[in-house]
Length: 460
Ligand code: 4AD
Ligand code: MG
Image (cartoon, rainbow, N blue to C red; front, side, top):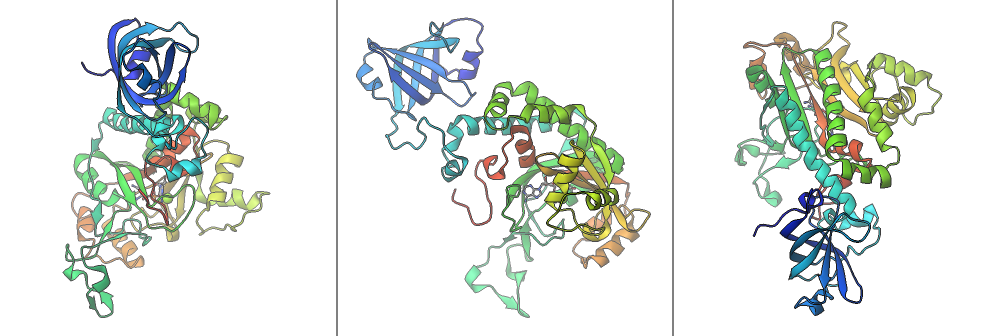
C-alpha cells in the first residue's frame, strides 16, 4: 500500500476506509485509554491526529513515542469527534520507524531564529520554516510558469566562469591547484597550470551568457545559484544566492521595467492564491502588516523615478542620513528605504544611473552621463531587482570596456555578439531570496535559504 500525503487527507471530501500515512511526531498526549498523536509529514502546515487505542498490540511502546520520532500509521480516515480538527485516523496499526531520544532539540516551545540557525538541518521540521521552504518551492514553480506563459526559454548558464560580469571583483576563485604550493610567475599566481589553464571563478551573474542566448532565441531566462564574495554581513546579502535573470531581445528599458513590475505582481498574486495556509502563518506570527503590504504591491502602479530626481528628493528630505548623497554616488540602503518606504510608500523603479557607478555593459544614454539602468525597490526589502538595457553598439561598448580596463581579448565572444546581428536588448536580475523575504515578512536572508552561506559561517 502506498502512503498518502497528509495534505490530501486533510482536504478529503469524504471518509476513506483505509489509508497509510507516514511522518514525524509533533506531540503525543495520553488519556486513560487512548494516546493522541499529532503527526506531520511536511506536505502542509496541518497535522493529522492519530488515535491509538489501548487495544493495539504495541500500545505500551506507543505510549513511549517521543516528539521527533518517525512512525507509520494505517487506519480509517474518519470525521473527528473532537473539536479542533476535521479529520482523524483511529489507528489499526502503528509501526515505529525510529524513536527519537529525549534530546531532540525541537521540543514543543517557541525557539528563536538565532537558535534555529544553529540547527539548520532540523529547522524545516518547525511550522515556520516548513512553511517558508514550501513557499520557496511554490515560488520557484511560479517563476517558471510566468516565463513559460510568456514564451521565454529557460537556459542554464555556467556556474564556473572566466569573466566578472559585474566588474566588482567580488568573485570566489575555483582552482584544482595545491593551495599551499601555488606556482608563481612574475609575483602572481600562474594559472596556466590550473585545470582550465586560466583563472576561473564562481559566477556572480548569468547575464553575459544569457545575452548570447537572447540574441539567438529571443526571450530567455536563467534561474540558478550565483556567488558573491562581498564581505557585507547584512541581513540582505548572502555569499550564495539564487537569481532569476530574464533577457529579452528587441526590448528597451521601458519594456524591461514593465516585465519586472509584472513579474513581482504575478508572484504576489500566486502565493496569495496558492499558499493560503502557510501565508496565514506569516501574517499572524511573523509580520502583522504582511497582507496590507502585499495588497499594496498588487494594486498600485510602481513609481518610476530617474536617479537624478531621487537624489533631489533625498537632498530635500528632512531625514538625516548616515551617508551623504549627491549625483554620482550610489544609493545606500538607507536612501532606498526612504524613497520606497517613506516618500512613495510603494514600490519604486529608479532608472538612468550615472555611468561612473555602473558596469560596462549598460547602455549609455544620449546625455553621455547616465546609463539605461534600473533598480526596483520595494518597502521592507529595498533593492529586489537590478537590470538595464544593454549596450548594443560595438564602438560604444569597446570604449566602455577601455574605461573599465577590461581586456577585449578575454571578452572576444561578448564583443562578437555586437558584431553579428546586434540588436537592442534588456534584462534584469531578481534576487530570489529577497522575493521570499518579501512574501513571508522574514527579514533575515539566512532564514529563507535552506543552508545559508554568509561571511564566516559554513557549518552545514
Ligand atoms: O543588481 P545585481 O548585482 O545585478 C546583476 O547581477 C545583473 N547582472 C543582473 C542582470 O541584469 N541580469 O543583482 C541582481 C539582484 C539584486 O537586485 C538583489 O536582489 C540580488 O540580485 N542580490 C543579492 N541577493 C542576495 N545576496 C547578495 N549578496 C545579492 N547581491 C545581489
Ligand atoms: Mg544591484
